[in-house]
Image (cartoon, rainbow, N blue to C red; front, side):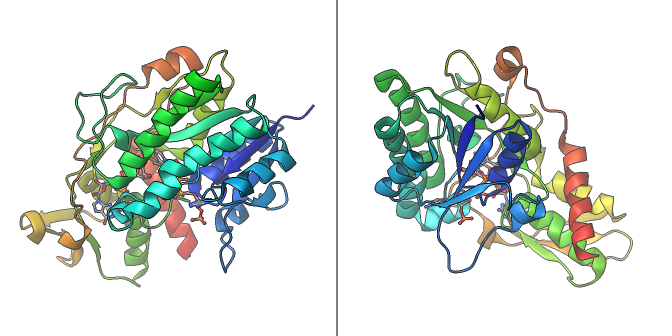
Length: 338
Ligand code: NAP
Ligand code: F7E
């Protein structure tokens, strides 16, 4: 019998990669999308998955909707990827972020508990839960210190997954995933914002772009590899939580330098703090400007993940590291414009 998986958040970055991965494993894949006035399937189209994924309209704000959806699709595994996932927006929409990202996970777990508590459950937890990091690098045992309404909401979903595992014996795993990026990353996240802007500057259709805190450091991995880790967690004997990361931290500044480096431009930094800007060393044209409007009320300065447990127990490890990731993303954005 073919295994069946249900993915909430099918229209997002990880939804597309996970759907592709599970289809290749021979799963029947159901994808939950929320109703919007215009279709939002560009990632599934880019991966040519529209004909293979069984799309079902489901909103994680609505428990009854989830119950009916799981009753109809009868999944063996549910991957809860749906979230209001943009940290910056969570400061402006904390209630909505909580409804979707925290209580949304509760609704999905409740639907599983009611429809079939044997369904295996993956919760998309986040390195943002470490926030003001209490140790370097961070492991599954590092104390949490969330720094945004998004991170607080993810922490709620994280602990609820553990609670449903302990209270109701639900096979629930939390993947504490560090930033993972790809050519289909949302354009508002810093990596894709940079590679898209650099491609436009190269083409001559954009002069410069504006950026926030360029000294923030992240542990950036490749989304295509991280979705395999999600699946591996649900194939184990016992449900547990795992960190997926690359164990390398790089700054936004370095990301900008490498992205421009890929198109043959050397960036020279001038000025300080909110006045800082980057010029093309060959032409002296300004290509990047810091704009404090992109600063966050509370920042996560540096995240660095230790993925030893995932390697030991799942056999998972990242292959694509920082420089290759920047190149993959930059190259795709150049191709998109040509
Ligand atoms: P993403 O691209 O922002 O995708 C989020 C998905 O959630 C989209 O499909 C979105 O639908 C959907 N969604 C939002 N509100 C919904 C609702 N009320 N009902 C149903 N669906 C809803 O995020 P991602 O990068 O793929 O990340 C996947 C998950 O992993 C998220 O939970 C994220 O918080 C978490 N995570 C991501 C990272 C990372 O670095 N990418 C790291 C750790 C954890 P629309 O397309 O309609 O907006
Ligand atoms: O910011 C800084 C910003 O928005 C990264 C989500 O997938 O990963 C993601 O959250 C860093 C921050 O991602 C700009 O201040 C500077 O320090 O790309 P980001 P994020 O906040 O790390 C985690 C693991 C998730 O779980 C989330 O769902 O870059 N930064 N200048 C900027 N960030 C943005 N977006 N735009 C800027 O102009």
